[in-house]
Length: 455
Image 1 (cartoon, rainbow, N blue to C red):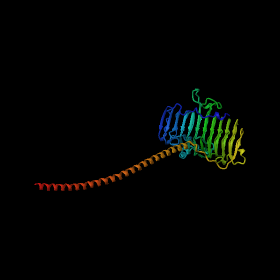
Image 2 (image 1 turned 90 degrees about the vertical axis):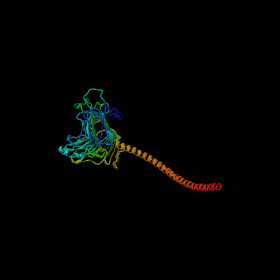
Image 3 (image 1 turned 135 degrees about the vertical axis):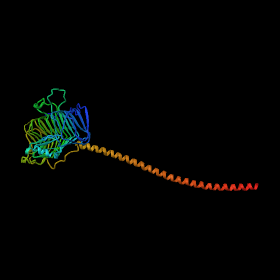
Image 4 (image 1 turned 120 degrees about the vertical axis):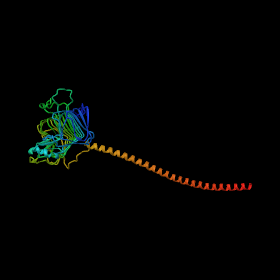
């Protein structure tokens, strides 16, 4: 098994690869043009509706503000009865990228469709096969599966990305790879034994289905599933089939039946590392044919047994279960359990030592790193800072207005005093005019007397 240094970030995955056109969408019907290729769809905040969208070979769906775009899958005609999908394509894609979307499957609105399928119904967001694909900061909610006449093996994959290496011989094509990061899958509905694997990836389609190379020949990383949060009571959190060079890292699976499941096909040169499993009846199951898998540094908290209501009985509990495996490393994991025989939770052959701890109470889910919450917190903080700046500016303006009011009042007082002074001067002037007129009259009388005497 290769060390962690070989399991690097998919930095060769380019979501903007050869995308030359941008189409901006506003809330309402989600309109994607299946025949217009190499388009970036930018979605403004709000709610969108669709009964299923057929995708072109290459496209990106990007929310202008992550966590503010909601897409509702509605049961309008025409739609596929058996497995409705929000986003689909009948053949492989060259590039798919989704960012910042909340995909609501609206399970309760599909009751009539479920009845029409006679109990064989699966409802998910998308399961796409692509040369390169990435889903980032998205959420899938309100999905589900209805068992076929009580069949417990009716499984839906609400968030699934598979790679496809194709029939083309050109070596100028990009490296096939997929990535699912910082997503959330929750609020499932399981009826009559239906269940899910919430986040799933297959990295080899087999030569019969178009892949040019047999499984086990990968030299570069094929899939990176990391930093996701999953809560699917009665379902499986993470899984794969026919996969190689796949890394499941730093995910959280809580309150679910099983944390990780691989039971179909082959799994080569892959790792399950640093995941946090909380209150799950089953931990990590590898019962398919695996070779060179490392299970390291996971925290596995084993909850109560899962009671199967379709096939009566209590399901087998385990922290790690291995069958048909070779060169498997299971080391540095912390197993939390109240079982009196914790070693019996480690089934199968492996190399490595692990730590067992008593399970006092289910640890809280660590969700502060959830991207949409961080985005909203960041936006809220920015709004609060803007509001505080506005309040400070408003206070400064009020202080200036108060100073101006005081100045105006001072001017009013001065004006009143000036008016009183002017009135006093006017009265004095009037008195002086009266006195002057009296003096003038006396002078006129004296001048008249003098004139008479001279005559």
